[in-house]
Amino acid sequence: MSRIPERQEPAARPPAPLRPDGAALFLDLDGTIAPIAHQPDAVLPDARRTRLLKALSRALDGRLAVISGRSIADIDRILDGAVTAAAGVHGLERRSSDGAVWRAEPSPALDAAREAFAPMVRAWPGMALEDKGIGLSVHYRAAPAAHDAVRTAAEQLTASGDLVLQWGRMVADLRPPGPDKGDAMDAFMGEAPFAGATPIFVGDDLTDEHGFAAAKAAGGYGVLVGAARPTAASAFLADVDAALDWLSTAVRG
Figure 1: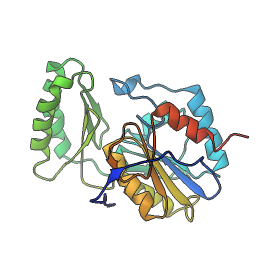
Figure 2: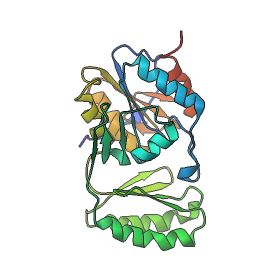
Figure 3: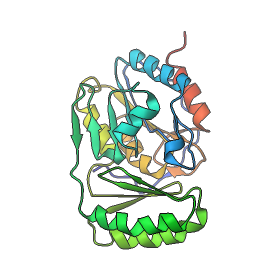
Figure 4: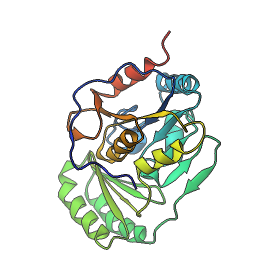
């Protein structure tokens, strides 16, 4: 698995205009090219974003992939099927540009997590449990007071090592050990049409740090979207709108 560098500093500059020649682009979804919503199913398709992604794929000769914590099925729903190459559940499932799909095996340990969080969701209005089959996401953006309860339960459920805990912005992801976003990027870079290109990984959350580190190790760079923080990315963009505007520089004119 890719390794996040121990020494990180805030990204200090915006990226240069995106030039498609020789670039391979890897995009996170929520908080990067789509706004974050209180509930995961509230994020909907957007005609502007769909047109942009289709244009980017053409400009990049197909060297475009979305790597998200969502399932591939949910990526397709939100993006109107505009991007073929995709990795879901933080790398535990991956669809190549030729449509071939690999998916990790579900862990029996997820059953205990489902049982533990189901009553919590009922007890905390606004909390949502997103079940992806091979992983669970506990969303509590609409119930911030539940943070301590979510942390305690998640840490207990992952103490044995059968599940891995990944924290995002107001979300706890529980998943079996396996590939992360950086590993998914590396896998894409080992096959057509990505092989030999310079990787650029764009994301907003802590789970995207694996992608930033992998892009840097492969001779590319990461772009952090959102508030400044210590990161392996070398450039930043203020928000989703700024990210979409920057991506548009590759298809203008």
